[in-house]
Amino acid sequence: MAITLETVVPRIKAYCPEFSWQEKEFIVHDSKWVDLMMHAGLHPYFYNDCIHPSKKCAKVVFKSKQFALYVIIPKSQWERVEEFRNILKVEASSNSTTHSVTTPLSVCQLQLRVVILSG
Image 1 (cartoon, rainbow, N blue to C red):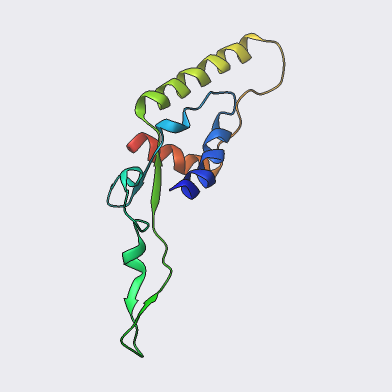
Image 2: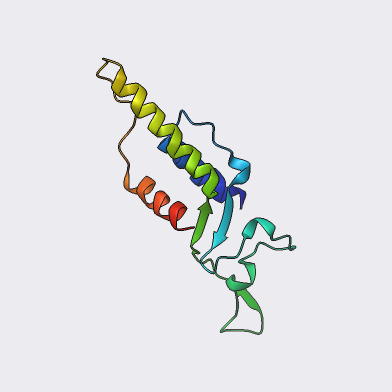
């Protein structure tokens, strides 16, 4: 699951780069809501879903497949992020500068937010 976190965590951090994210609290789930961080098998969790009988002989073949994975941020951490962003907004509005503290949400970040809040 390390590759999932390596891919997604930078995008999560981009949502609020000033916040001190607690990455160790993040959890990876599949579409059946299985906690993949707890999987300790000899093979990757999805390995058996990629093994298929060969049509030409009695052997099995490996066929790659795509799987839906979700990086879950605990509700308590997400609430701290939202509180932190609100503080930044208040501080920004009390300053007379024209620089924006928050960045607009990209589609990717918006999708992450939906996953986080529904999880």
